[in-house]
Amino acid sequence: MSTTRSGRRRFLRQSAAVAGAVASPVGLGLAAASANTAAPTFIDSNSVESVLYGRRSRFVTTTREIEGRSHSPRPQIRPSPQRPSARTPLGELVGTITPTSLHFTTQHYYGIPDINPAEHSLMIEGLVDRPLVFTMDELRRFPFVSRVHFLECIGNRPNPRATTVTGTHGRMGCSEWTGVPLSVLLREVGLKNDASWIIAESADRGRHTKSVPIAKALDDVLVAFGQNGEPVRPDHGFPLRLVVPGFEGIYNVKWLSRLKVVDQAYLSFQEHSRFLTPNPKTQRDSYDFGPSSVITQPSGSQELPERGPYVISGLAWSGAGVVSRVEVSTDGGQTYQEAELVGPVLPKAHTRFQLPWTWDGDEAVLQSRCLDERGQLQPTEAEYASYWNLTRGQLYGTIQSQLGHCNWIQPWKVGSNGKVANGLAPTDVVVDVHG
Amino acid sequence: MDWRRPTSWLTSTASALALAAFLSSGTVLMAQDTASPSGLGRPPTTAELRDGLVGPDGADLPAGRGTAAEGAVVYERRGCGTCHGPTGTEGPSIALVGGEVTSFSNYWPISHWPFAPSIWDYIHRVMPYDRPGILTDDETYAVTAFLLYRNGIILEDTVMDADSLPQVEMPHVADYTAPARWTPDTRRGFRILPTP
Picture 1: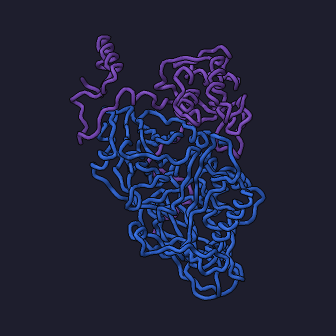
Picture 2: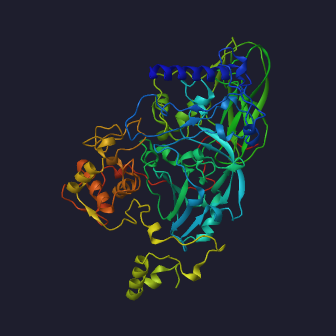
Picture 3: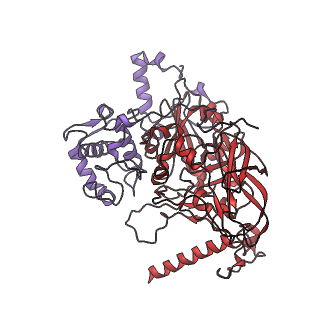
């Protein structure tokens, strides 16, 4: 009986998500437009609750999409891995900042800890002149910076099986992060001559660790306590996290409690798959993300209701710095036109682009490509495969953590009926393992 | 006392003994003349510095020892088999004995880890799943020895301690490539066009 109920709840959730996505080509999640959507719960915008901490309209129902391996409906043995992971609903968002409530989150096994900031501290030790422990109050007394940066999991990959842009690219978001530059704290402790790596450790029970090159630590890494104007949320590392701009998501250690300065990379549990990869060519690729972009509107599972004027829009980003140019093709890559960068255009941040387009009712294949400030061009699937010497089967039959950054171009196919579907050629096997 | 040049004061045996006494006293580690630029922060206690991260070369491994036979008892008593199976192969969690790396592998079987001290480090900080951190240093050496023995990497009676564990030659160490150096302008190798 309980199985049936949970199955039905799942069905309703999926229906609502699909209804939200197809309700409008603009993709703002205006769920009321669909008869399949359950009546929204009444929300009193005049209530004290709503006034104290604002709420969105009851007609806006966009939510994150829970990862397939999280919150399994099947009973699990105890102790059981807790992985409350979810993706960003990119197809229903506008602008460049991801609302914190909708920002993707990837959790590994130990769940989200409940940390009292009054009892939390950051220790910096190892190859330093003065090992020190800072309380949260003390960290707030240093000069701080606020920077907008994207954060992406290497689990993101254009994928012929995905039906939406959340499926291909939902493991990323973009926030304004506020915190103390790590370089400031490293001056406080004083680095010894042989300091070459920093091992960042989390306070969660899994004590996630990641090795960060000292050159990056001194460049632009932040010890962040703020996200989009508020304290960092628990699922993003409350009260303190590392932000390593442009690098793989796994470097951005949440619930940060220890930084150990050492003379070599450590090999934590989460690092083996990058340093022992069966394909040594991807080895060099395990730091900053390459140039990337994806069209979010119109994108998979959305629908153009009639021929006429539309705006093709999406996000572009690069771990190298600023996005220099985005080009959009409506003929599957035979010709490209330059899109407008809507702005703000910031280094290592999501950059919104748009191109006005009139749909004439014929089939069309829409895709974008990004050129970054280093002159690096986003590759096609075939270019990526050829560069890394991989077959197409390997691109989709290999777990993402062994491939590196899968930044090839994602095409969306507009049918003559206005329905938008994945434009990548079908493939037999897709290995999509997350976390 | 110049804390930045430890060799200058460790040459004296008397200084080394004084330091040892100081370290074991449980007091703070910082001298008055080494204040940070801001004056914020406090020195860690010896207790806070203990139970830290252990390097792949065995850096900061603590004293202690254990054998595979003792580790079999620890494996049983601490409930490791609840998740990893009675012989470390049955699951439901990651197999600790045997296992191959495939195109599906996200986590490497420990027989494929390149450096044995990393196994000690992970077990000591993160296991057992429901009560991480409860294993003593001796228990961690013992259960590490047990797993290395069951994977056919060491002999049953080899004692694991801070000297012997870093000497263990892991069978797949040759597959490991140290990470390349990163600089702010490292290119990623895709087609380069002139920037507009």
